[in-house]
Image 1: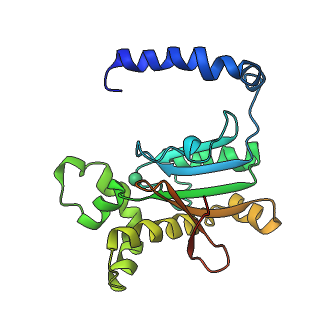
Image 2 (image 1 turned 45 degrees about the vertical axis):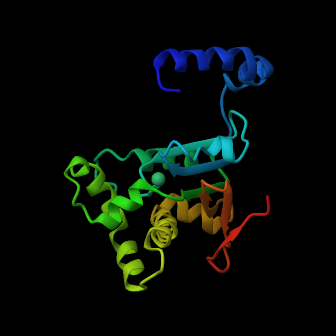
Length: 207
Ligand SMILES: [Zn+2]
């Protein structure tokens, strides 16, 4: 799919296929949504949450951004897209789970490791991925074989920690009505690694 004609053609296939098969579901969803799971994923075109989890419309409340990052709680009156989605998901939709999903070969992680020396992305991406500075420091100090992979996982830890800095997230987690999870998707092998909440280790999910 490279042209707008192909994009529109894709819509026509959707209308004739997926939509036609699920017209009743879409009619119900037109009245409102009540997803139980929020997913925070990368904007990367290769790690599509609804595909990976075979989710139907209405099932996942998804936020995607460069490197699947959650900023810390900063009620400073500035514009916070992730925080707004989070507030809506937790306080209004009352989602029961939040999954932060990273992926292999992440360009945002690459940008963080490159340390801001690319002027093409200096205005927005570099400051955005500075959210990873502490995680990058921890990773580089541990001198891993694969810093890219190590930071992809450490970035998820950092986002999970930042999620807990939101008072409404912390309250729901402590009340037992919300659980936080980490996941990482290996694009090449279509393999999902799920973070074990007790050990913090990422384990391959049996396909
Ligand atoms: Zn990415």
